[in-house]
Image (cartoon, rainbow over all chains, first blue to last red; front, side, top):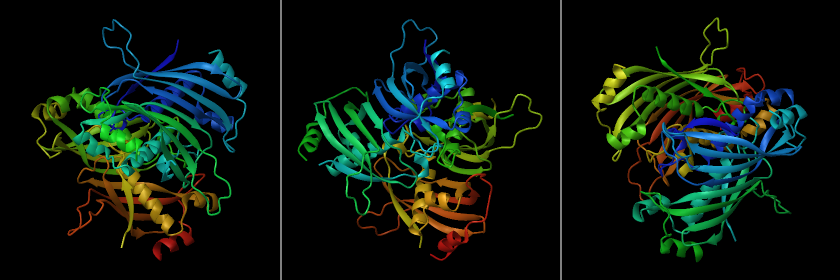
Length: 140
Length: 140
Length: 140
Length: 140
């Protein structure tokens, strides 16, 4: 039931070890969260201009399970795990994109739990998530 | 007793929210771990050439507590929390650099726990950390 | 007649000025070059394993004309401008993605000229581009 | 007579080719320009708050001459090449840091010419560089 977004591994994502640099999975996860929100009608630039707030990440827990390499095609998922008034918990995974004949589900390359909080764009102080946004996320 | 490494916040580190992008703390933490290892006589490029292995990150847990901004001067720490035969756990913090008259210790901007494992550079399979390296880390 | 590749602007691409950080256009250009090569049947990871060589960039000239912002949808182009035995010159542009009813072509946000050379993957010394690759690029 | 700033190559800077990714030299150049401005008493975050403007890059020309690798220590220079009322041209180089006994000057790894323009921070429209800044840059 999770949202899935395709991401290709480019030179910029790799390091001299020949694999994706660990910080870059947080970029991949952010892209997938952004597209998941967009799929629910939530554009972040517009939010900032209209609602005067934005989501910021408050914590991340990531397991790097198997390396991804240049040219690999990934599917990066985002799924609401928990919703509070000021914070959301998002479960995310980076999976190898399914091969042509995929008999078995692929094992995750990387899994993460990301907590994001709503803040006022000016003061960066925590605030309640606008109800229209919370509604869209909880009852898509 | 932890190792501390100064890091300045540049344009590349910030995002349109005006603050350091969350993935970039993992870059800062990696720089501080590298310099901590270097301070113990452990150069990673040389290790790879001579010992045929390298450290890779297996998990990260990060709390983003207070935002850092353009031009901020940080101190990023690295401290051995636990050492096993194939893995190390490193505790890390990003702190505001102390002001001229710092009466009270500054609150951390970001804290993290990073687990790294030793792998064969060719196969990327887990292996025992070479004893000379483990020795240097545990009895510096 | 140029190859065009869609790229979305995410938080990671922006800086505290609220716009895409200038170095990131080189990432966008590299992604588009990679996908252009892939569209011609040229996979870079496979090339490195099979032909023992890779393309590296030898020079870049970039004009930053108009800023791109968070959530913007871009089209990034790649077009062969000149082909030699060891080097290629690629003309690239980042354009705003066309709106639904685009009466007029959009002005470029960023234009560039990138020169890439073929090198031996081990020594990084310049070498002749394998003829099968040159053929695929010149007569697609 | 140019300003020089030390930069170490970390994992984040390298790619799967084992060398510094070409876009990252623009990060290195930006860091050196920032420190050069800071050495002249010009802080960019403060400028934005006080003068309501900022420098943005309008063009870059970069030659990638020799590869840099993980753990390499570089010196990155910045030197005023030309100053106009709204634009500056900066000449930059990335050099290998001098060895203990350097009999001959080291050949540059990367050279660049970067043009930056002053813009209003709100509208991003070009504007005259504040005279106090121009003064500090031209007569340091």
